[in-house]
Amino acid sequence: MRYTYLGPAGTFTESALLSVPGADSAERIPATSVPNALERLALGEVDAAMVPIENSVEGGVSATLDAISASEGVRIIREVLVPIRFVLVAKPGTRMEDIRTISTHTHAWAQVRGWAEETLPQVDYLPGSSTAGAAVGLLDNERPGYEAAICSPALLEYHPELQVLADNIGDNKNAVTRFVLLSRTADIPEPTGADKTTLTVPLPADHAGALTALLEQFSVRGVNLSRIESRPTGEKMGSYAFSIDADAHIYEARMRDALRGLHRVAPEIKFLGSYPRADHQSTAPSAIHSDEAFAAAHAWVESLFPNGRPAALRR
Image (cartoon, rainbow, N blue to C red; front, side, top):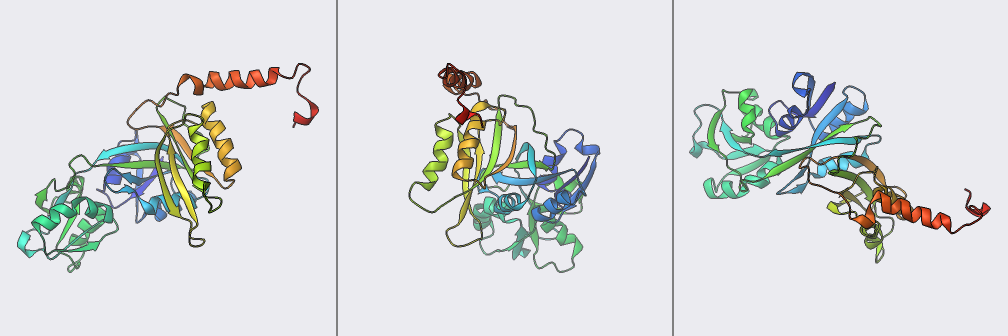
């Protein structure tokens, strides 16, 4: 297996990838961005790509949601949850009072903003491509344009020469980031009873009740939604698609029936994969939404035709 991930080495994304069995001994190629990782996957340069998709503090990662939605043929085959801990690093000899500008990824900055405002109230923020990229930039450039960076402690294994000025600086000590492993395989992981299905559903028309028409496809079939976010399609103002995580597996009758209903309402729906939940939380349906209940309902309707299905229905 060949993997790519949002690099460079030492990012939280690499930590997520290393939790995948066999990834520690496989070829791992850092990508400069999420679109770059998906491009490598599309070109066949790698077999799978690990990217961040959601944070417990900031919500969905817009760049990932948009890139996955625009891609063709990719499937999510695994998710990984990584507890997030941040450190403030700088070149050796740097003092806290020397810091005028800090660089890191935008999602990381959002999670340490409170600490920064209290500890370094006059500091400016410079967005970085990744947490590790910002930290490595301190070493690679004589004048990077900033004096300190915020990154994962894992980066210190690769760059022990960095000086840690502050540890565990996140505003929320229980922050977690969710990562997904993408592949171009058509295989779908077997259901476990604790599964998730991810979809992109364009809003078919902008009118009263349009969103309700989408949501009721899930609710009447007993499918809970653990995440729903709207993203602009870029086609025109007011054109949106919904990124959805549903607590069910496509092998379940209720999920397949919901997909049929969604396709009638929004024919451009994209199925992005069914895969095990990283937290192993059960998604078992109630009795009336079980596979047996759907099979019994189908059999009952068929029994209403004593002479077999009419010709008009044999299509």
